[in-house]
Length: 123
Image (cartoon, rainbow, N blue to C red; front, side, top):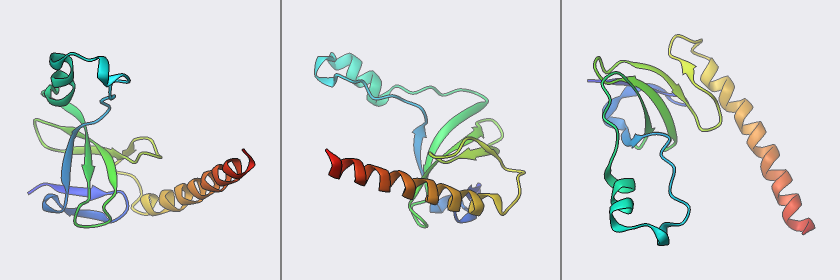
């Protein structure tokens, strides 16, 4: 069984997670202008590399948050993870780092939410 380290909850069994597939796929901007083939390629055609691959994962039976993992498709070893707020973190980093990063990220997110609320009322 694959052991996946959730950036917020710590190491858990892979059965607690759902794989969201290849990370970094950009949705086409004007989907009404796409042909059926182009839309089908966007929806279904993914890379299947041998070696290092970036994937999206959701901790469905835990915190229900999305994160990205860098995984070797040959050995299944997860080499690092990345939240949508933080860059790639090595799996060998300090065990307290994810919790510290989360509090830092929360304060940054709260700051952005406050400024967005102020901007919304000023318009």
